[in-house]
Length: 176
Image 1 (spheres, one colour):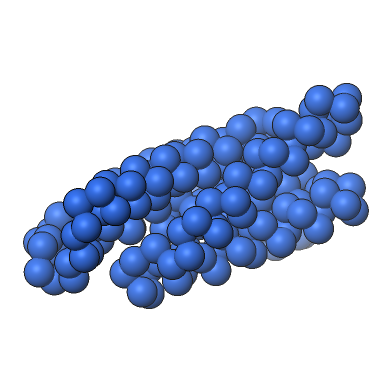
Image 2 (image 1 turned 180 degrees about the vertical axis):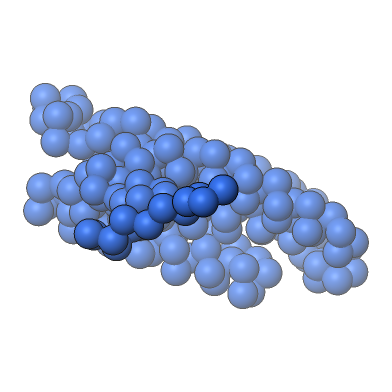
């Protein structure tokens, strides 16, 4: 898989892992274990993809990627969906399904052509990599940031610009 796709896959998986950790923080105990374990696995796998410049254990990890989607679909099916934030889970599922599609398509393509993956330095220009990294980070941030704010952990986050010291009133523009 080209470095650009590796980067996109890793950043998307990292974002999904962060959302799964945040969802797990506010979930009932059995679901907490599932979402936190999957979130930690996704983050570790994303780091491995960036470090190794390839997708390790792709077939095994596809099952891990799709586990949260299966879990929350079952939870909704049995009528216990009110214990989970559906918006954040939908966002994380969007990312994981996109990652799964990219990994499957590139794995099938490389298996059909019997091409050994080339090293990133041989096939891609550095500016292309930087552009892909920036674009994937912007896209994932646009999906993950609102998803994180919709979780239990996001409800208690400190709003930006309100990190004031209690009891200390300072007139910023006095005398102007």
